[in-house]
Length: 517
Image 1: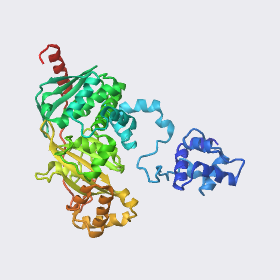
Image 2: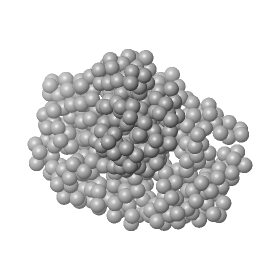
Image 3: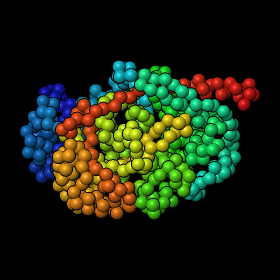
Image 4: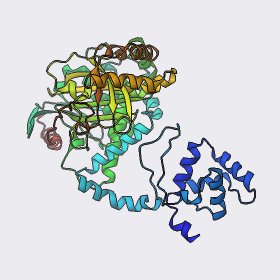
């Protein structure tokens, strides 16, 4: 028994994975054990505790379990590293299991995380943002409680007008203060960046908005709706970041690597307020009907008078098809927003900079090419050492309110749709991969692949998937250093960016106190 204790750190996760891989429920496993030895057979709750690391099986119980799965008892011990992680939908999960559990205890993580962040250059706020994004992706961007509150406020009107939001401001006691702040040019090692402070919330009921948004209703509505969300959801406590174009407080280098409760709360308020704005401006049912009617076509000049960034992000929350991703990027490849509901790999190395990304990703290619058909769609074959995936994306390149070129890209995983329609997705992948490989990474698709993708486009009512077939499909890789093309592509590099938002905000508040604005 002592040997079992010292070598059972991975026993629980191994049992859970082998049970799931054999499609057995906890009840099934308990019954199987009872058929072998009714007296020693573990109950359902006991097996659950074993899997969760709360109990260690006796030698008799381990013998029973090993018998069920026709494994030697030693297979469940630490020396055997034959382990895969199984998800609830029977697909392998790429993440490592957090075992042995005692090394992932709250106390140890609380001590280890700050040191990890310090060594990697990640700030506490960035880490909080990463946690929230993971939570958002795990929930498939579904937050019905916020949706319900937004629907009650907007009465599910689509499109909503600036005057409608002003009435809601009056209802909730919010006052707008206009300020005049010009764009700031900031020099970086690899180029220049323009930054504009658009708006910010000053507790408890003042919203400061840049006069530049008076002639930009799309962005004005988003900013107003976001601050309204902060007032309704958080009582206007002021714990949310300013809204900017051209840079983001997410990239601030002034923050500490220590994860403080203030960082987490600020990041969470930012997320909830932003999600509320999307739900207010694009009510779920009305916007879903709009997307179906327009085959999910999104352009900068749309009849909803909303920004393409908001419309694209909102698709990931209202679509009945859950396998979406969304990226925002500045030149030459600085990603400022990420959502990966389909599990697509990140095309860069860490949170601070793009490290040798593959330039054939649409989000980077269209951002840096001289000529771009706007909007543009692309079929991408993502190749890694272990797997091949097929995605379609729709990208729009426009200038932000500070005058920086920015790209918004919405994409989805095509493989689940192939499976749903009974296509042989492996055969289709092989066909597309062979065509692209022969043409050194880019090729128009063959008729069978075109037919399958056209059918998916029709069923999902996403017209830009069909439009993507007019251009060559491209092989993309997570990193250009691991390029899968015969002639490797050349990467791009990302500039280092600073953050002057806090000082701008303080100057505006000082001017307000001096009655100069």
